[in-house]
Image (cartoon, rainbow, N blue to C red):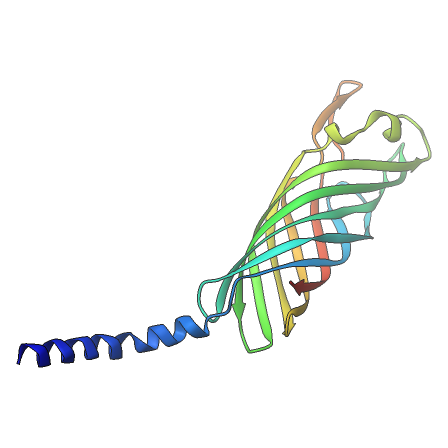
Length: 214
């Protein structure tokens, strides 16, 4: 009788756990891969009369860590270029400054599988500026941007949020993402007794990417 009860108890436990075991077997494997894409970047500022997008690139790696069949965490690491061409004018000064910024960027995204082929992704990112250049054309050369500004004149860290979607076909993903920076790109400096921030702006990037799991 005891053996029968024990066997029934073991059978009940196995039957109770079978959906979980099946789900674990069906869960997607961890993926590692490479990704690259094209950026359309801008700098959002109220100090300029116009800001035009610049084309750039993104290149790096990703690691997809499934939590369930529908949800995964995806940390990434890549090099990305940002910036914009900003046109400004005032009573005494007008011109155009083209900012070219290069970051090492680390997003931590949550990926939700909406259908078998389509997913959405969102999460924060942290970036570190490794290069910052500016080319300026103005009617009056009061300040030489090229000679007087270097990478240390920008905030080295940028943080923000990312939101996007992708189409998954086998080990290949094609997607689009928007990154919005929450920190100012430029540092506050003093020139001729006046405080200013160049650029007094936040990063914004539209990214079209192709990712391949290895």
